[in-house]
Length: 253
Image (tube, rainbow, N blue to C red):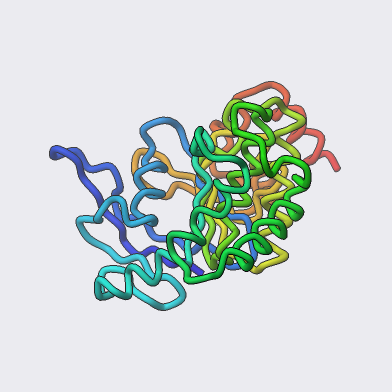
């Protein structure tokens, strides 16, 4: 579990996060949503330690990040997996080299142990024949699965995903959503996803944090969205006619 309390962050005198408090639950897909400029990317980067909050705390299973020593922070980072928006694979490395990179960097595993683990996670994300291929030789959806495999290769407690469906077609996006949800439940990970994809929200939104103008404007599940009277989240999610019709049908039973 990750707990955020009264988080504030400003840049050049402009306050981006204005006292955000929330909890990201273990074993669930936690989504951060909001319009551009709402503060969701700053919140995600604060969780990752990229930004230092002006005030407030972030705790990882009771460990307040700002209170940790440098060694403790390094140890915490080994418990974190990250799926970047553009996959961020190394172009000159094969699929298996990309996936094995964190193990070579952060563990003392033998070459054989690394290979076994790489084989295991590639099989888990349904990539069994792509080991020797370069990123340029596989599809965007396969690249995203490689990125997920790399993110979980070190058995993380916390998984962060920044727009994991960016650039993917709708069918592939659903596959990636379901894969992230399956892995989250299977390994009991605290997964936090920064997303603008409303299909993802409705597909895997077990705990949704909606930011507006640097504030937490709403929090709930994908089911709660159908019945909430919070106008801010209603206007944001149901800006398209399709979702309006879905909501109307749900309310009619």
